[in-house]
Amino acid sequence: MIDPDRIAIQDLIQRRRLNDQDVNRAARHSDVDQITLADALIEIGLISARDFAIARARVREVPFVDLDSFEINPANAALIPTDIAKKFGAFTLFSVDGTATVGMADPADPFALDRVQRALHAQVDPVLCEPAALAA
Image (tube, rainbow, N blue to C red; front, side, top):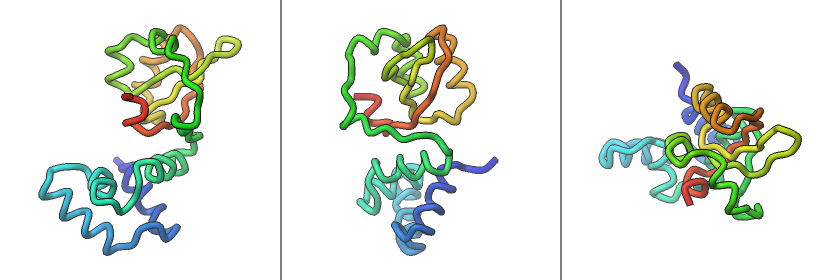
């Protein structure tokens, strides 16, 4: 199975945002701290969480939404049950004509998409958001 985060890292290398030395350094950090390579790249400051999320969105061919520049309606938190929202990193941004635009940590996960869609009883238009921003 192809790791989408690895593809995002390759995309960042091709776009000259990272180089092989950066990735090797992060890989060593990843091994020592037992975290993902993506988390290691972010943790040691080689790439921001926002830039990595944008790369993930680009390779998954889904829109990226920066929640820091989006007006959040707190009432939307009640639209998806808390256990589902936390498990799948999902938050309803808005709903129009029976279609909910949902910020997700991994909008390419078909199981997560199905669970969110069933919880909302609506068609879901997923967008990718930074996981930490969704959790907040």
